[in-house]
Image 1: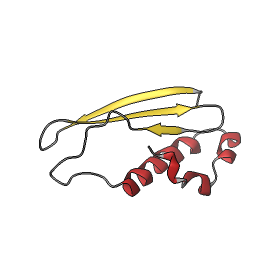
Image 2: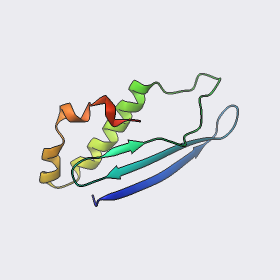
Image 3: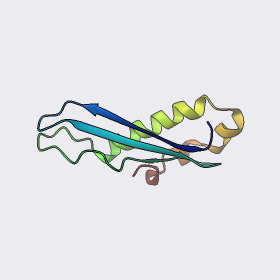
Image 4: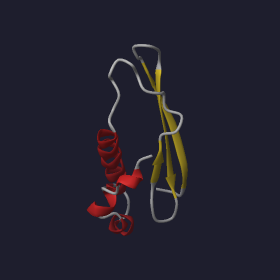
Length: 89
């Protein structure tokens, strides 16, 4: 994966109003960072995702991306590094 910042927005139906999930993946030379700033605030209907779920789904997606990258990049991402809770903001 090339260095850079990759952004996307997923729009979906919600109870009170439309929901938006914003994600920005920053890829410097030797790491990855995901930022969800701009995502719709909490819902009053209890459809919110706790941080442990958000972290797990983010780590899974990053691991899928890393699995497709060369062996050199894979060596940088060991299991303990992927589970670092500071990876999801």
